[in-house]
Length: 125
Image 1 (spheres, helix red, strand yellow):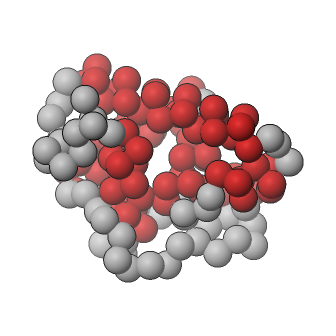
Image 2 (cartoon, one colour; image 1 turned 90 degrees about the vertical axis):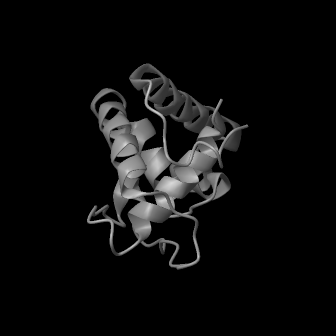
């Protein structure tokens, strides 16, 4: 079983890198004015793993765009769940639940694809 949070952390590192070729707006989901994480020392995944995860994220975006935006601002831009809750004017507990639901969707999508990720050995829980 994979640690989906670690998988998404590595995807966020990949997407934030200059070489990813994926462009996410820093004004995503109404977070205008918040600076994205600029650390270059983030863990990253391979391009192959990232493209599989991107496919799952695309499915989530089609079905639940709000939950997709939560994953992007949290894992890509490194905005804390507390800060997301404050900006959204929601209870932090509710934000945590919504992010868990989105993580579960991605985990289920990866399970249904039945594809091994190159990072699986490092992200087993």
